[in-house]
Image (cartoon, rainbow, N blue to C red):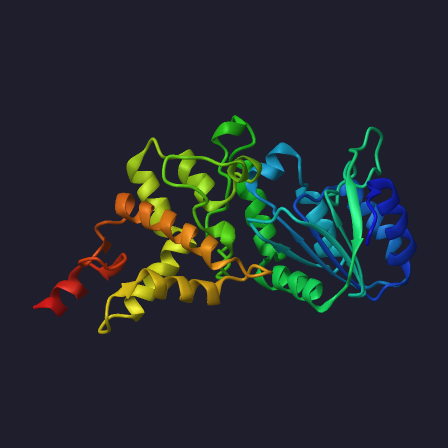
Length: 314
């Protein structure tokens, strides 16, 4: 069984292993320049392949939780840098077989590289195939940040440099960073419409955290919901199913279970809760697109509305 260690001990362990490594995967919600300068000094000689995945939301940069300059340094040094909006994990993988995880971000305070650093807890985990596959899924699901995208991010942030933090968007427009197509549990509503949850508070860049933050404006909320990944996925399933028997709740549950990228896979009971919440949103914000109804005593089924459905009925 692994023991808990502090972030100071984590830093010591990383300084021991990184200078000799050939591949380094760094997954951290936040990334700042002090930690990148520290990392640069460790990889000067061996120059490993480095993959860095961060959350990198607009609010993170405005609040100083992450640095644009740190990301630019990484790109200039040849790192592969990626963004994943629902990221909260902190994982350090060295040559695949050495894996540390915990609460320590790749920041000066997270790794206790600066005065008055945070007190974090970390541990070394078993580098089994499941752990390696989980890390690989995160990296593959994230969107690659290029120099051009970073320039767009910086220009977008300049628009909000004098704006109060409460009005800063929690996510990037798709013309700055496109959405990843992979689906995770966190891409679905974690509560019913009008409710909130601790997950939304911890990560306001989650799509449904953004949707709930705007629920005073019906038109805006409706637009955001119809653009959400989970609704777009569900609508695609309904369109694909046209000409067949209407999609039942159980059938959609099975499709979703096979699609989600979370590792380990969520329980089917959890998936049913996610779908139930999504259906509740559809009834409020997308009833003009998809009908959710119960034929007789059967479970809820979905039917596509609109011209294509009307023409088919005729």
